[in-house]
Structures are given as structure tokens and as C-alpha cells.
Amino acid sequence: MFRLPVITGFGGMNPAGRSSFHQGYRRLIAESLPAGERQQMLTGLATMMGYVAYSNGEYRDATGKSYTPAQLEQYFAEPIFNNTLIRRISTDHFDADHIATHKALSLSGVGGELTFSIPKKQLPQPLPEGWHISQGSNAEQVTVSLAQPLPVKVSTTYSMAVQAAGQLPTGFELSTLYPSRFHPRGLQMAIAGASDAVNSLGIPWETICASVAPDEIGVYASSIMSQIDENGYAGLLQARLKAGRVSTKQLVLGFNSMPADFINAYVLGNMGATGSITGACASFLYNLRMGIEDIRSNRRRVVMVGSSEAPITPEVIDGYATMGALASDEKLRKLDGGTLDYQRASRPFGDNCGFTIAESSQYIILMDDALAVELGADIYGSVSDVFVNADGFKKSISAPGPGNYLTFAKAVASARSILGEQAIRNRSFVQAHGSSTPQNRTTESAILDRVASAFGIENWPVTAIKSYLGHSLASASGDQMVTTLGVFSDQYLPGIKTIKEVADDVHDERLRLSTSDQALEEPPEVAFLNSKGFGGNNATACVLSPQVTEKMIAQRHGKQSMSRYYDSREKVRDNAQSYHHSALQGNFKTIYKFGEHLIDDDGITLSENSIEIAGFKESINLDLVNPYSDMV
Image 1 (tube, one colour):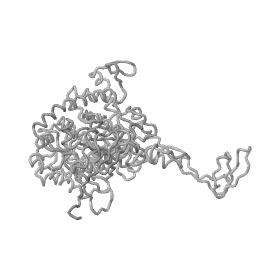
Image 2: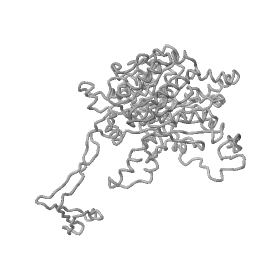
Image 3: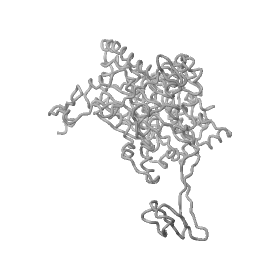
Image 4: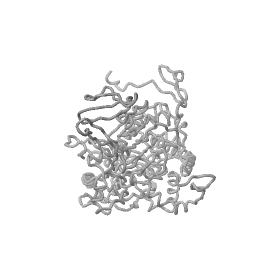
């Protein structure tokens, strides 16, 4: 009997804002929200972005003026909408019109010989070939003479060809959430995102740890691009060329496994399993697959899965732009007859010209169904399966291939085996990879349309949230996941609002692609999250709704257990709502336990049958079963 991996908490942040309690999702469907939910979403963003602060029961701006939620919407909706989602790169990151670079020059002397004076202490050692040194006007100066031209590099700036990105809300200062000195931005996002997920549980983490053995917890998280700002690999690789020094932290903090390592060490104190799988843009789903397999096979009872990606740096953008993968300003102007609208830079399944890079940090917490019932954990859905397939032989490492046919068809077949044909035909929807490249719009739509035909699906709702958020690389399917949980809650599928119409070459005979939010006729029961990564990293996840998940759990555990579960869940929900209201007020309760609760050798007790660890109620069992008993 497989245990069911149940989603009991989720959190993070992306260009739409905070993820927990569907706040970021509701930014995407702002036009479709009831007035109360819209005002709550805007209130949370207003405090997150620093427009107002909450104090003594009131929201006040820097001048001391107080605002009701309705007034917050009236005065701040426009700047909030202009400074979230995809937009022109903010100077919070860098000045995209003045990126530091060097211009190579060759200097020659007038009349043949080049002569110049420099401080003696600046002489390079060893001296370059052909340099002749003589004493200058004082003891500290020397004169350099050389006959051949002197190659030099002069500091200058350039304007980036790509100036759109999906950025965290402007004004949201990660560094103020906890003591984050020298932490790369991606790791700051990991701490904040994982904390949001833990706080959303409504169950103290200590309670969870007391309910399971230390090795029954797992954390699986990664990034594709590693940590590549000045506090990570960028600073490491640039230090010598900038005549600086490498710091003691830049190398290790740059690892792409650091999101998991930071969460283990500073958020959870996890001593169980850990891992960091990368599979290009499918990395979140690769880690999710490891997590659900651990739970289904009874190796783990609690798993945190996620990704943190902070790729908005000149070097990363230059790299993807040189490949021709990004929507450059020039290409966007050509599409729009000379005008430039950064907020419409990403246009999945429409007339498009490349993807838009983005930053995001997303984490979900999975429990096995028995533990969720025991602890009264709230249920946001479950993950029944994740399928991964490669493309086989390729002529281009970045080109799409046939592997996604396998992952997507298997995911739909898996859902059909659990829920039946009517559910996948009438009560399912698709989170498309939807990268906003011309090649993706044809190849992915062909896959979805052909799978729909094979399974008798006639009008399949499809969305592509990269139109709002951009492409956050390793975290892209994390963005899909938290949006999916919002769709299960509110039953609105975000429209692809950055396109005027679906492109002529999109295969959509059986697909329902909309430029406005889709109100789903029936409560959705299953969502398919699709990812097509560079190198042939294809993955598709099958996510079941909370209603379906709860029904399945009730079938397994019975009425008496469920009655106790419903009673205990009320307190959990109250605790979770308390955190939600705190976050709306700008207090994110970020968890950062640096050097706390350290366990030394004396805190570990060993016997031939178990390991006991100080601070953990349950011991680790060493009375293991031989899995190869039929062979020995």
C-alpha cells in the first residue's frame, strides 16, 4: 500500500508577491477577485513593498497618514500593479542602461615611443616584456617607456539588449528579514520562502519533529544557475579581474545545493535526508519526484520540496540573450510596430520572440496521509505522481524533443487510473510550460493537443503563468504548483493576458487557451504541471485537488479517524490564519536559527538497535530488514 503524499503547507515569493494563502495567485486574477479578497491581496502587497506599515491597529504611510483597506486600494493599486510581475528591470537590481564593462584599446606613442609615469608601487610583477623603467620626478614615481603598442582596457558602460524581467515586488527588502550579511540573494530567498511554507502549516515544526524519527524528514531543493551574484560565484570569478580578493564565503555559498543546505541548517534543523537535483527548468519537479517517492515508499514521512532561483544578473541575462532565447527590446519593438511594453514581454502561445527571465523561491511541505490525519494538518492537495523522461538523441541541446510526449501521456494515464475518464475529460486543467518562444508554442501545443485527442478530451483548459511571472528556471514549476493550489481554491484559471490572440501556428483544436481568466464550470479535480527543460529534461506532475485528496484519505482511514481529524484541524487552521494576518501586516516571522540547538557528540547515543539524538523524541531504528533475503 502506497502512502499518499499530501500537501500540508506551501510558501515562498515571486513577482506576484507572497505565495502562502494564495496571495501571489490572487495577484494574477486581480480583475476576477471579489472586492474583499482584492483589498486583502493589495493590503499584503502594500506592506510587503513598503508603501505602508502596520502599527497600533492601523496601516500608515511614511508621513503618518492612515488608510483603510478600501483606501489602500484607491491610492496604491496602480503603483502596486506597475511594480509587480514582469516589468523593466529595477535599479534595485542594477541600472540596465549603464552596465559596467571594459573597452579594449591599443595605445601608441606619438613619434613611435610611448612614455608614461606611474607610482612605483603599481608596477606589475613581473614586468611585461619590452617595458623600460627609469626614475621619475620623485622616489615614488617611475617612468615607463616602450616601443610597441600598449593594450589597455578602459572602464565604460553599455545598455543591455534585454531590459525586462520578472522581479520580486519593488521595495521588498529581503535583507531586512533576518541577519543576512554576505548571503547571496538566492539564499536569502530560500530562507524567506521556506519560512513562509513552515509558518503556513499552522503546526509548530517542533510538534512535527516530535511525531517522527529524525531520519523520516527530508529536504529536496536546488537552483540551476547556482548563486551567481557578487556574494556567490560572480564575485568569486570576477575578483581577480577587478583587482580584488576572493572572500572566504563566495565559493561555498555559490553551490547549487545551498538552498537545501541553508534550510536544513538554519530553518528546520533537519538531520534526515537531503538532496539537490537539477534538471534545468524541470528542477522543481525532479526534486518533487524524489520527495513523493520517499513518502510513497515509507522512507520519509515529512518532506520539504522547493527551489530558489535569483538569476537577474547581467551575466546570466547576457548568456541567454546571446543564445537568442530571450525577448530583447529590439525584438519586442518589431512585434509591436515600434512600441515597447515591458509588462507584455512574455507571450506564451501568442506572437512572441523569446522568454523573460525571472526570480522566484517556492516551497511545499508534504506529509504522508496518516501523519496528516494524526496532526490535523490542513490539506491543499496531493501529488500522485511525477514522470520524467529524456529526449533521446538530439541535434541541439536546447531544442525540444519527444520526451515530453511520454511524461505528459503517462501523467494523464495515471490520473485516469485514479479518478476515471470523466475527471480528466471534464474536471482537469493544464499548467503549460509556456516559455514564450516561437518553438515552444508549436511543439508544446502539439503535445497537449495530441494527448487530448488520445484521451478523448475536447476542450481542455490551459494556462501559461510565465505570461505574468516570467521564467524562473529551477523554480518555474514551483510557480505552477502554488498557482495550481490557488486554482483549486478559487476555481479561476489565470488567462494569458499578455497576448491579443492565440498564434496561427498553435495546435489548439482540443485546447482552451484564453486571454482572460477562465471560471471553471466544475470544481477541478486534477491539474497537470508540465516542464520542458534545456538538454531534454522533461517532467509532468499529476496534482490532485484537496477535495479529491480528502475523499481518498477518508476512504482509507474511516469515519472515526476523520472525525478526530476535523476537530484537530480547526485549531491548525486558526494558527495558520494567525500567521497569515501577521504577514499581511508585514511581519513574515522569518525563521533563522544560526548556531542554535547544536548537537555535539555527547548528544548522540548509540546501541546496536537504535540511535537516539538529543532534542528528538523518536529514535532512529537500526533493526533493518534485509531486502535481499531471497538471495542470501
